[in-house]
Amino acid sequence: MATPTSAQQWTSDANEALTLSLVRAPEDKASLWAREAYEGFHPTFTYPIFGEEEKIYGYKDLSIELKFASGSLVEYLNVKYSEKLPSSSTVDDIEGTLSKFIPPGYYTDEQKFLERVEQDAINFKPFGQKIYSYTRSATTLTKGKNVAIPQLLSPEDEETVDFEVYHSTWQTPGFREFHRRMQLFVLLYIEGGSYISESEDSWEFVVLYEKRRRRSSPDITTYHFVGYSTLYPFYCFPERVRLRISQFLILPPYQQDGHGSALYTAIYQHVLGSPSIAELTVEDPAEAFEDLRDRNDLKMLLANEKFMREGFGPEAASNNGGKVARTKRGKARTMRAGAGKMGPPAERGWLEKWRTDLKIAGRQFNRLVEMLILKHMD
Ligand code: ACO
Image (tube, rainbow, N blue to C red; front, side, top):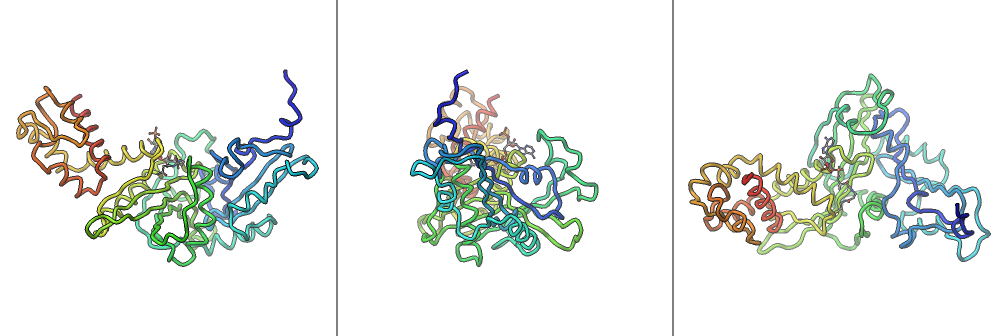
């Protein structure tokens, strides 16, 4: 086996060295996902912080603990190692580097941090307006997780857990400071993600929290951060806006449990319910997000009886005489050629009317219709 070179011995993988965790007060109910959050999870990317190679030089057995109070996201930073090279220009300054990306005022004394966690557990409340909520059964939320379940749900834990989504802007009191702590997750989990400008006034935000009642004092409600999205309204002729999802993330301990879908649904419902918003668009979606968007948009269309009946029911087939509406990319017509049965009416404006009523962006709506046509050809 090759022996590591001296440089390798002093080099750490930044994604492995950095561990994040979300800390709850001891009295707060710990369920499976909370335990995962507490035990720690790693970033997917650290190149925006530690450079393209995602390596940290100058330490042995390096461990960087970055803990967050589960609701307020107040931070605690602890850098540990067994050996450090004598200080020289080549040894990375970990705290100096990280502190450029997290706001000042983070804790380095764990005891003081834990006292703050306790205070925040009681005092922290979400910023802005509640726009959406949903409930999950605690046992559903543990499905598919590769961890033994016993002690995770104590008998007195309620069987259902509430989740709430809050909408805010820079003007919402306290939100700007909260966002300065939260935005680090964009660098760590969204490929190509970068901080947004605080001088751009128009940004809007939606934040998803888990809401629990404290075990020992059920009158105390605690909130725990799950994920968030940044939204930007662009002018849309003549007097409305087009709302664009810019950044969207669910923290790893909460992924694969339908929370991403719920947050997307919250945003979509907000768009549908706001007369000033013409449509919802997405900025440069990652593949996983595109998949989530397609699944949720399709589910919504399939549940819309009128749309499905007019576009894909027997009514559509008989009215159509074999012709179907042409989507912008023209694929629908190509696929339909010769099939002669179902598909959206060829009647001018039918697709566009539904698209504007449902506030879905043009390209996305065409893709969805194409998917539905394919589904109905089977
Ligand atoms: N129980 C178990 N599994 C479920 C449940 C449920 N109740 N509901 C949905 N799922 C499954 C879905 O079927 C889906 O499975 P699939 O991937 O095999 O299709 C999977 O869970 C994901 O769906 P959700 O759980 O709704 O989504 P999730 O909460 O995992 O969020 C997201 C997805 C946002 C992409 C998340 O993984 C993430 O934040 N990733 C890192 C950051 C990122 O890439 N963000 C998007 C960048 S693009 C942009 O910002 C515009």
